[in-house]
Length: 161
Image 1 (cartoon, rainbow, N blue to C red):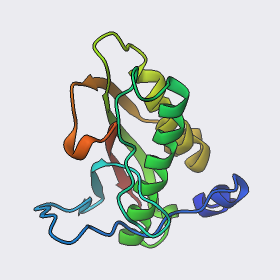
Image 2: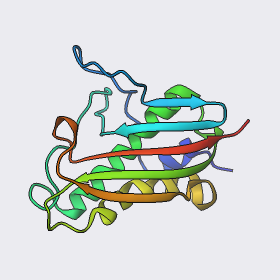
Image 3: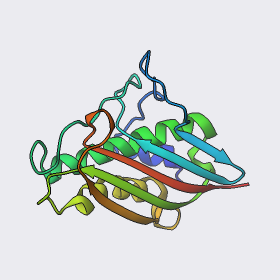
Image 4: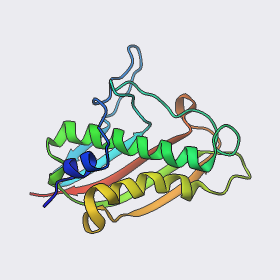
């Protein structure tokens, strides 16, 4: 049986390094918060290969197309998986995704936030399969997000005992 790491390799994807918080940036929270078998995932942007915060930046409907947003949301998923793997060691420990919440900076007339966040959801289902990867989800538009991010995506999942 393929592991999530095997599926990532089959898709030709590699995880970035775990997040490297820029010097001087105060973040009084953790990106991955584990409590028993529950994992709360803080809102994530994307990271570059070295783990540096890499956006995406801008506004959907003005600076980015829906397809660009979809692709960026896949990058956010890779960042989430990198930080999750850093904390739990093996992505096969994930018993099930519970919820995903996608926030998309968008113009008032942009109505395709759900299609943008599909980039995240589709990758999670591809990597974990439909049984473990299926999740409840919301995708909403925002006037702005911290640091000018075009999107920030958070979630919850369960770990195997």
